[in-house]
Image 1 (cartoon, one colour):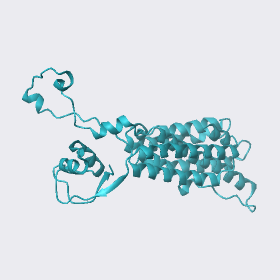
Image 2 (cartoon, one colour; image 1 turned 30 degrees about the vertical axis):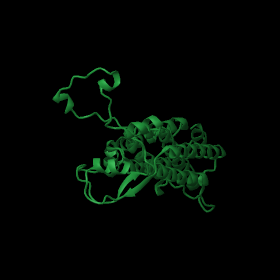
Image 3 (cartoon, one colour; image 1 turned 30 degrees about the horizontal axis):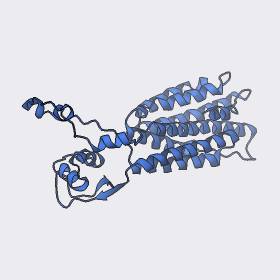
Image 4 (tube, one colour; image 1 turned 180 degrees about the horizontal axis):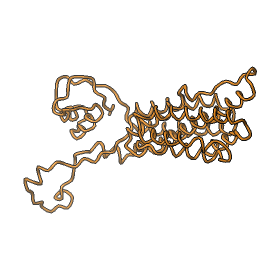
Length: 299
């Protein structure tokens, strides 16, 4: 997002006293420490990258370093996340975490008061620019991660619905097939497409909208304000399209302890959808599904 680089162009600690520079660098280091701690459990790669950037901050911020280089390093930090290249569940977790980081109290802007001295006001203003960069880059990466979520295309939905069903050579060609017990007893390979659920999509939509709305109320840059508005519009259009193609989830409770295979055959008239029941509800023993509310698609 070039708007972030443009907004950071207002950052400058050139010509100010050394103790003011040290104050700004110290605040930036503290904020990166917060990012590292917040990401430690969710994605250690980002946490480690934040620690490395924390060590380089004394070189990246003071002159003659350019603000553009700092923004690029922050974006690179977010993109080291391993979850950004994982499955749908990993992406959803990363999106929510990035959005949450932008709302953290450690990255909130600090007030500049008329009673503040010139040096205090300068340090606070520049600290706020750094905090804004961390927040907006986190939002930008979260919004981009949404576009990486697997899309609920017809082929993907059909693939998930027909897991376990296969066509034998005899069915496809008409020729008799030679069978062997070792082949007949081989487990079927299940290639499912891991799609985000309805609840996950609505959750990340609400979380990201909250983060963007908060940033819209904070920013003083017209360019960044308009860019965030575009991101929000595109984000909601993308997720709403996905929601239209996603199965809404309800809760159903079995009448008795039954195998997931039997439940799938009873509820969906398709025993192959047992894998969906198992995955959504983290069933540890598919042969004995307990009598508890289970999350299943409406259809």
